[in-house]
Image (cartoon, rainbow, N blue to C red; front, side, top):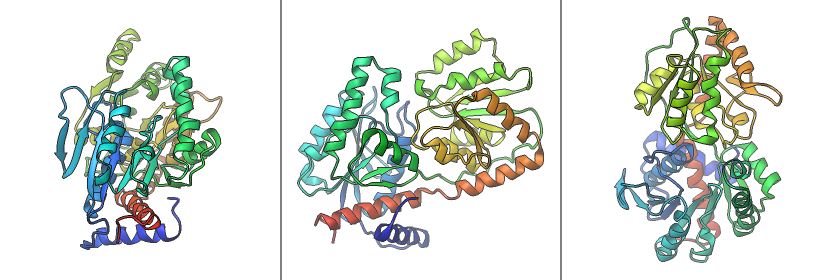
Length: 404
């Protein structure tokens, strides 16, 4: 975790208070607006939403009044209170970027601090909050390649312009939070970011106990996460065919929901992989964790990540990950220790095959599992929340805000 000076001391103090059951509430009376594109109960929610929600829960425990302002899926309530967090849902994936700033403008006298999550497009909160209100800009990763991969060329260029020159100038006086060192370097190198950047990694919930995974038996691979295009889940599905000769009993399990579920089901049928690839859809945490704990490997084929929350969730269960050597994932996977990275010029299938050969040795598999669990213990939502709390307090003091 990259966190220095009085901020680090404050984070450590808050973590100690939380673990010891202390009743000090350093954010008592502070009103925080968490702006995020989605919220965790939406069908396409992922790691960014989990981060925002877990931080919101921690801030609430520190005495803050938290409003989670986000987009709205069809059928959802516009106003709701969940876990004592006020939810304000508004707009579709496009209108949300107009309606959230408007909401903030109308309620700015009732907001003491803002966490503005930039999911490629910012919410422009510095333009609408009161003078002196701290805005923390949260960026999980740079979206430039993602824009060009999934949008028409003209629209991708607009997205890159807003993410780059527009946001760079708009947030130049706002502390920026990102979740990995490589994402920080991409902000500096690709976007020429002007604001100071602090790295506050994702946390990881301690998994409930599950049945111990078998040390021998047929190999299984799991993908767990959102079923969306940029996750490239079809590459994980295709592993069943590409590795059929070397690993005829290999089974690939895909867990999650999202718009790619239908296309993936058709791909499984078209390639004759029924029975070798199992599309589970959404699973409750207990069933998902049991399936993951029994796997040899967690595989993610995404080329756009800020960190890779599912990597650490798998590691907490003793399961290593194969992932591409891209920003974010190269931070969450320790190559050769808690998983393997697919380097330039390598094929995903070749790296997965090498990993399976290593894990076929029970002693090596046990060694990797121990390293994974030790790595996952480095990341907790308490540490993440304490870091964000320290940053809010420091910004309120620096700007002469409401904190006393």
